[in-house]
Length: 95
Image (spheres, rainbow, N blue to C red):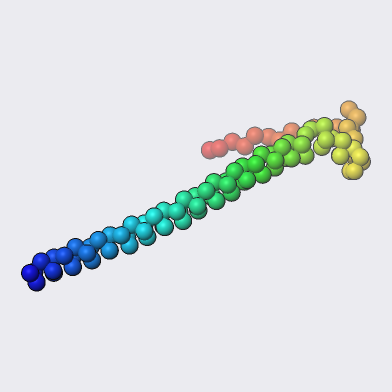
């Protein structure tokens, strides 16, 4: 009889331990799932921001815009043919 009580007690402790482990596992799973969802939302926001930055970069580096700013802000102009000097740079030989 005492042996049976010991077996029943051990089984009860195993049941309680298993139940606690299951609750802890579910809790941890929910925390990790919520964390994954937050990271996915952050990733989506960063993707949108990256696309907006690429659009802005293309707009800022547009050839027509750069040329217009060079003319208006820097007072640059295309040189006349007689103002252009060509330099001849000899090629280096690798021995």
